[in-house]
Amino acid sequence: MVTIEDYCQILSKENRTGPASEKFMAWARAVGMPDHALLCFAACWIAQGIDGGIGSVGPMFDVTEIMRWTEGDPRYVSEGLLVIGFCPNGDFIALDARSKKGAVVYVSHDEYLGSDVSPRDCLIQIAKSLPEFVVSANQATLPMDYWEAIKREG
Image 1 (cartoon, rainbow, N blue to C red):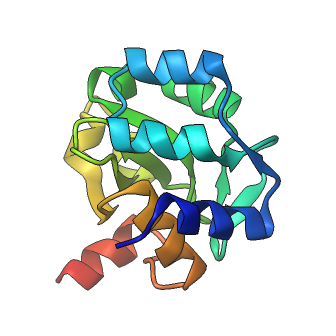
Image 2 (cartoon, rainbow, N blue to C red):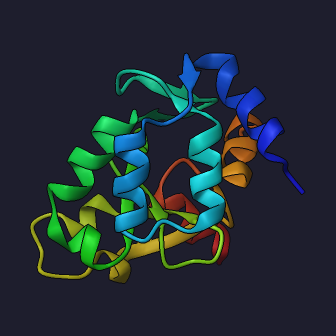
């Protein structure tokens, strides 16, 4: 099992990190972020800018950008998804607030943008938790995007 300490150590290798702001933590609680994910953000997250990355994954957003991207599309909030970054092809990387630990998912930009579908209709889980996502990204074992994840799932 990946610890929050491992998660912070890996995240800090390529990014300036620090605890998420109180403003973000209050917002994240209000939108229903699971406790485990809240603990991760309270311990550390990307400190500034949207060009942070983890291994071959990213860009990943700082907390201001997470709030902006998530609130920018009401379907994300209503579906319990928080946009935390992008895949290289533009697919969204999101944290699933409805899962117990805050699973990380890819949402297909091809299927979602310009449509009336729920983001849940075009997502695939790639990690059971934020720490698992960070470790897998660091080890370059994650699929590059939604379509590769679908192929791997078979």
